Length: 391
Ligand SMILES: [Zn+2]
Ligand SMILES: [Zn+2]
Image (tube, rainbow, N blue to C red; front, top):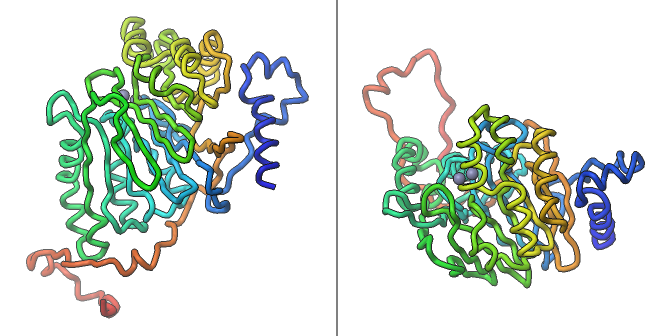
């Protein structure tokens, strides 16, 4: 049944979504009712042992972050039970929480670079996941910078310093180990070097060209499938070489210089520089994808306003005619060797935290956050709290 559904979806997307807008328009009104994506209800399906599920948690720009589009973040779940996050940009925790994931499994985040639209919700993740099921340390992977203070380790340690009050305040209430964050900083100049290898999963990294040295791209290899996540970059030779023939390749795609100028109300010079010298405009994205020929090319870092999106699609289609998704938040892809299907995750606006595990409930908690004698002199005698149960 699952295979049949996958096949139907794959035909459906080949027929409508993956073609240029012009082709879809030419297909006529009969196709109009097929423009809505099929829905995916989180936590209702088990992954097949050979399947990969990718969820877009954020696909937009930092100017502005909208209810419709949060900043870069991608959840990758594998059939062997492993879960990986790539980026954790501002606002993306809203979408991650909406999925109500088992946070005890999400303990590895790979950062493409240290712009806030790619790691600005790391603080929300550290605390939110710790409150909601994560009882082991969080591992954050990312590149070095030109100097130590511009690297991932310094960013994580500084963030933990900023969170000192928050983390100390939860001492004893939450599992000790869940409050720990371990930075794994690797050389951003590493070219297609493994930065992670465990349980049949290998993740390699190579440099990207973006604003300052330090942005990187990743390639995850597992069970014969290849997932590639490009860090912000102008088209670069390493991506062309190491992303080749990926099953699923995500690469940024900025609006055109004209589109960005209109959107931001900027002059053409900064718009051209941002769109095409430190990012990749639509025709550049198309050229990159034509060179690497993935089974599915995914564009993100977009503005999904109709005029701008149309310009992006037309630009891409001048240089690339293969399978394409211009990603929006909460698109979900299931990837196997036979098919790639795409759906939209659906959840309520007001979600409850996911269930925690016995291991979370029983994990060691030591110490206790304490307030001063002075503050406790302010306790109002007019209210008596219920007795505190024993530990
Ligand atoms: Zn950036
Ligand atoms: Zn960015």
